[in-house]
Length: 359
Ligand SMILES: *Cc1c(COP(=O)(O)O)cnc(C)c1O
Image (cartoon, rainbow, N blue to C red; front, side, top):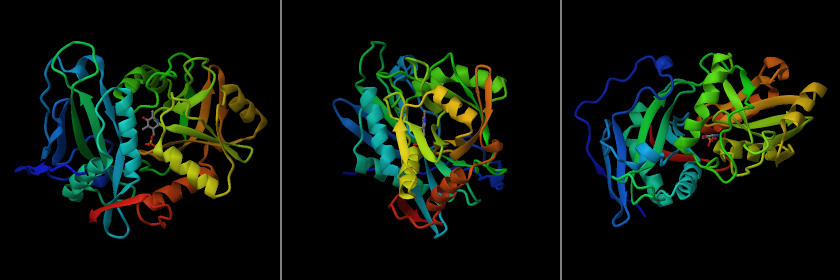
């Protein structure tokens, strides 16, 4: 199915930034956005693309009080073959619906949602930046929007999609990051909302992130919420380790976000003949490997950075350097292969690329 989307074009198109090296992340937005409302009685209705601008909210709206909000993060790329395309968008749409199910927000028909994303991106195609490594970040989100304070699964919701041209994540070349293993705060617990991409998970993570930054670290590595022993994720990325030639990544226990970059990396690594173990991995095992010299590489995976090498790990008073604080060969190979597919420079053998329109 598809929704009829009404389009109201802006009469005041914005000036585009000439110097794409100054784009940064999520600071500039395109001329239009998509909005659609939901009510139990009418389902999703009023699908519309309108000029980008503020959204009015009832002061009692559920999202403001009880955090009923979920989101996705994906990108559109200007490819080597003169197209605008997206990377595995159906995976994001399916995850949006899994998040919706967890937070009792309404789900959206997959095909209709893909049509919405493509329609908006095609309309905004001139906003997809040109410079190497740049892209158009797409942020779809759903929030609960009942106009009263009762605590219930919502009867009204709003779906919005905004787009932001973003700069190359590694403007100065890929640099390994410093990661602090967090021993106090936890991001999520099993049975909670860890596997859902919801704003509340981020709200809970900000304090540890702030403290880590104050100590000179880029991000925190989260441990499981029950035993504070098993590694879950790093910041807003999944995490992988190369230990003694094998790849180990935390299994999706329910408190780990099922990343699409993670999934793509696991698929590529297995094709390349690596043994990939999705299992519990404790901090003790990791530091043991680091001590023995078998921790060969460590990296985070996520849409924003694609892969992010970890060069330095700290836990309480222990500190380890990973692969000499340089990007490892396999981390580099994953980065090259994934970005090659995304920007249309490598063959898309897996059908991961979804064409949107001519550039
Ligand atoms: C979005 C996200 C990821 C990465 O998912 P991708 O689909 O690879 O972008 C990892 N962890 C958290 C907590 C996230 O929110």
